Length: 233
Image (cartoon, rainbow, N blue to C red; front, side):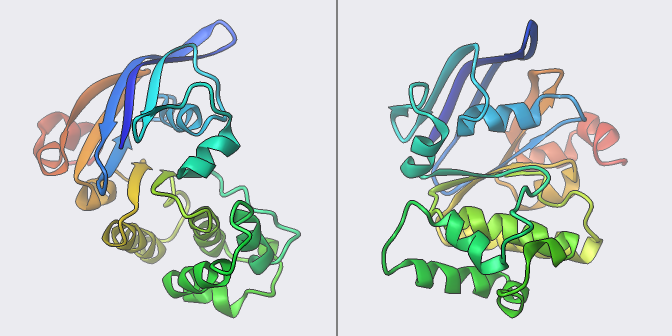
C-alpha cells in the first residue's frame, strides 16, 4: 500500500532523514521505533505532505505522492493523527469531528461519527463540550477519531500514547487493533516500544535518520539490541 524509497528530508541545511526505505502492505500495523531526534515525526510529516522532501520517492497505492499537497493525500486515503494532538480546543468535540470529515459532505458523516463514538464512548458523552476541557487522554482519543472521520485507508499515528496513564495507553492500543480488524492500515510511531511491538506485524527502528533494524515484530521483541536499548530488558 505504501512504499518509501531513498527518502531524504532536511531542515535548512541540516539533513535529518538519510535515505529511508520502508514498505507497508495493506492491512498491516507497522511500528516505527527510535529515540528522540531519530527522525520519526519528520518521516510521518513527509508522508502526509506537511514536510517537503529533499529526495526520494513516496508511492501510495501505486501513485507517486510527491506532486500532491497534504489535502490531496488525505483525499487519496492517507491521514495523520499528529504528535501533540493539535485539536481545536475552542470548538466542541462534535465540531472537531465534523472538521475531520470536511472532504465528505454526504449522509455517511453521521454514520462515521457514530462509529467514532463506538470506538471512544467518552467522546459521545462529551460531544457538546469544548475540546479544551477534555483530559489529555480524551484529547488523544479525539485526535484519532478526527483522523478516522476522513475515512483513511492508511492512518499515520504519531506518539498516540505519549503522556497517558497506563490504562489509557492500553485503550489506545486496543483501538489500533480494532482499526486493523476494520481494514485500516496503520503506521504507528511510538516510544512505548514494547506496547507497539505487541500489536504490530512488523517494525522499523530509526537511529539518527537511518533505518538501523527492521523485521517482524515478534523477532524485534527478542532482538538483544532492541531489548536493551528500547525495552529495558
